[in-house]
Length: 254
Image (cartoon, rainbow, N blue to C red; front, top):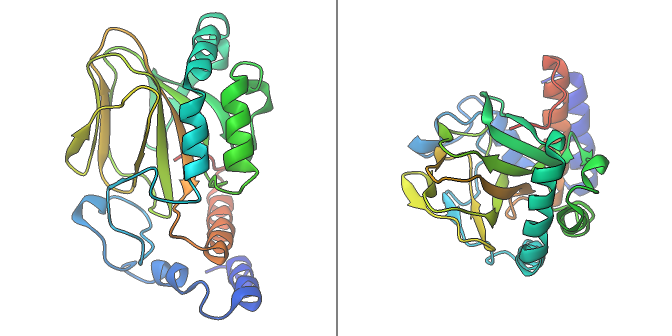
């Protein structure tokens, strides 16, 4: 570890106690602790978190408010998305996953690189407000990652892959879902139900497809895994931010 990382972790221990970030330290040890075979391509697996691919979006008290608010506002969010797609197409860009870039996977970012994307507020005002009030202002969003409308064009396929770690969790709010779409996580395939949320651990191998005849759009929000603690979150932000700095990365993409 660099002196910067050591100092940051020491500051967290001093404030919260010597044992407060034990799981983060274990994650950094050679081997990184045990992991499920379908997490083998993930970079970091923090021990002690539920090794469950799919989660009930209503199972965690800290996440329930944003799930409820999104689902309650579905009709308005969908209408605003359609308007933006037709009139503000320049606001959407090819999605740049850390593994690939796809022209048939479009993104409209609401939160990226540690902050809200203010220019998106006029394109998707209701979703922007909900994300700001219920995810950003409450500290539920993982500042290391992002929130965006994810639009898969007809025929788009996201190949099987693992994302970088298990200490954040991916919420999918199904905004506009044609027939012929699906997502597979750890070998289990589910369909998005329009107006409802799915929640899954994207350190497990997952893939998605749109075999329909029109675009499929979900609002994706990278949230802290609800089983992580405040000191762990603080340590993880310091750790990953410094690693990205050393690697010359600006961060924000999975």
